[in-house]
Length: 284
Figure 1 (cartoon, rainbow, N blue to C red):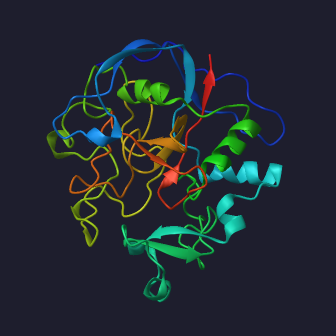
Figure 2: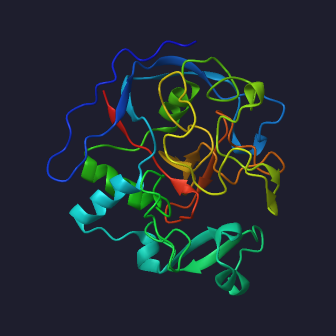
């Protein structure tokens, strides 16, 4: 079992309506980043394995929740990109039948529906709400929205190296935040797709869409959902896009095995969807 970080007392909270950030302090230092796994996505630059050193830093114990994001929006009067544009992408298995029948779909990913009115407040558009999902990750947030929240909270996004260091939880070159087996002893440790993607999800892990941000046991550093649930924005650029890490509830090894610790992908900074959120960091 890897050692827990020596201090889990967060730095001073902001003022006003800003909630106290639930952060874990990590000592940093050198670690082995990347992978040479046979099933790595070579085009994503997951390898080679190299030693990378990160300075001590704080990172969110979980992704930013709807409760936390709502406090930011109310206090700052912020309007997200999805709200300004009037629509966002929603997985078709979560879209009401009436909306799904007429929704526009990207040709290369037809399981996504363009849904008018889909925002962090209305994750599936229409009459959907976050009323019973306040402890779930805030989604439909683009990179600019994440940066705005961080600035308001006196925090920042983690670098990609910090994110991977944190996700590994003290383990060396393990495939997942908890070890090398996806379901040790048959127990699900993350929220990803089970069944035949994208038509049949058995929901053996308990969820079709997002799960609460503190679902499943944390990794060795006390961090929740570093694999699956929602993609997480990082600070780094990848060409003209921004890095995302962690995978989401839509990941399945038949097409997207990016819930592994070393996996990575990218997206345009003004893109958002129902499986994309973020967690915060701070210098130590």
